[in-house]
Length: 316
Ligand code: UDP
Ligand code: MG
Image 1: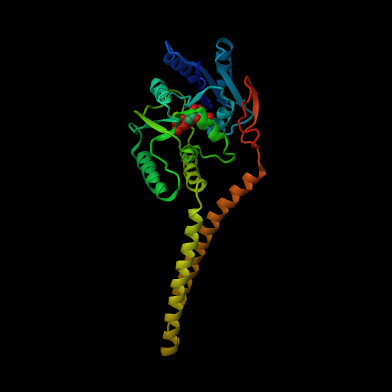
Image 2 (image 1 turned 180 degrees about the horizontal axis):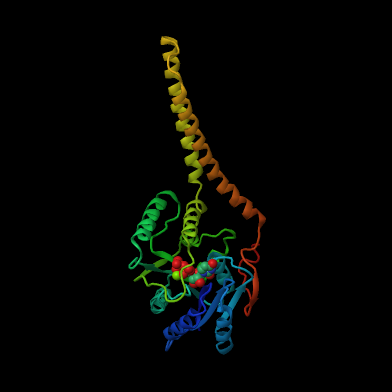
């Protein structure tokens, strides 16, 4: 019998735990599939863990992994992938923004043999600014990065066991799942749904976090920003050489006549700015190398009622 696992990262979602559980259970009524629900409690400060444990006591298909501190959703996803035992896994948010009604369609896609069934969201009900910002971001980023990232496509998806194993073979610590999903490729199918607003609690993304997430997307998958620094440097070098020659000829012909304050200060500011930006970009990469070389675990578990499946244990 096929088992579908659910990976549900939960950070302060006490009210949503029973709701999402019921919603998932409903989808499996009369279905030939078994399911397992794995909550990843990302060190919630409310009663999320208790809510999960209460469910787990009554329903053996409910499992959980609870972190020792807040490690973020990316780490929660990784923990989920490492612990699930099913033949396929569905990644979902706990806040019911990912409609469980899509589950049968996703499973149907799995039966058709797809390795990734991706749920794509439209952006109804979102503020105009956020809509505009993300659309521009994806337009821009797809010009730059080497993997295709699509607007409205997030973590909500079904992954076959092959896809899970492929994801686990990537040992990087600083994970950008959206890019990793796209990087592994495999047979993909897209199902669409309408955007739903959050039921309980509030979004944990501040503007700052979204901004940093955006930079992660830019840097995690390519080294083009580094090349950009190089090209800017070369262009400026050429231009300044032309300028120097040009002025030199002027001086040879007419002698020194203009006091050079304006040109000097412009050149200093411009070059200083470009150098700092380039250094910053290099710093981003060096920082990543630093964190990756430390080989720290992506998360620490405080308590769980599961065994880690550890497909990538040998690789480490
Ligand atoms: N989440 C998490 N750790 C965090 C922040 C969020 O596990 O540090 C979970 C959260 O409980 C939810 C999902 O990730 O299930 C998406 O979070 P949120 O709804 O805040 O993001 P949004 O839907 O606004 O993108
Ligand atoms: Mg949400």
